[in-house]
Length: 252
Image 1 (spheres, helix red, strand yellow):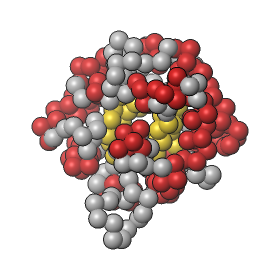
Image 2 (spheres, rainbow, N blue to C red; image 1 turned 30 degrees about the vertical axis):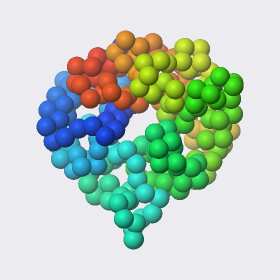
Image 3 (tube, rainbow, N blue to C red; image 1 turned 180 degrees about the vertical axis):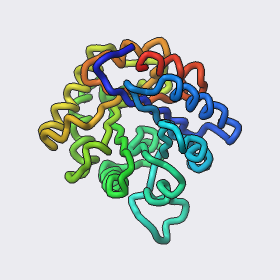
Image 4 (cartoon, helix red, strand yellow; image 1 turned 180 degrees about the horizontal axis):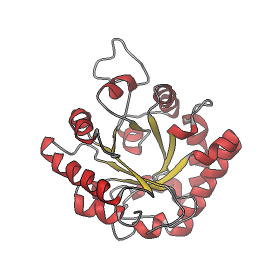
């Protein structure tokens, strides 16, 4: 068990999951009740189609349910978009923004992510803003420059620090089975912490910084023990209860 840290463990299901996966949520709820969660918070971000049913199931528990994206707009003629207030109406308590897959495949810019984060925070959603470098940027030793730029341009000036979370997700580590070594994770998380402190002052102490990218039961304890790492954003390992539980056990 990792002591002296209040960790956030978030599962990003991406485009995976159907109503039959309610069993995973039921098992998580039982796990949470058994452990009483004094040392961590657990968040699951399924596809939008599952938010309502998952939220209803988790209603009387400490399990948080979130979304994987939201619109920068609140309402109007924006076909296919879902606003933060609509997510809340479905039962969502959090949202992931700026994930590298959306930055790459949907060509989302820092400016757009800034607008989404501003709208999400305005609606009191726990807002997880992702940052991270590509393999080429890493090889060119541009990791900190890239992340600094993303932080500067993706985050609003006015924030509620209790509702803002940063997730460092090196693009080259997502789904690859590769991860930075502990020294590199420490270096980046320390850099992010200093940047947040420079911008937000004492408020920054309440902003959690997660690590994401091929987190699994074999490496989670080592990663979560690193200074400035306040939790994890977990992909594939969050889809199977036994794998996710193995990570959660390190925290509770």
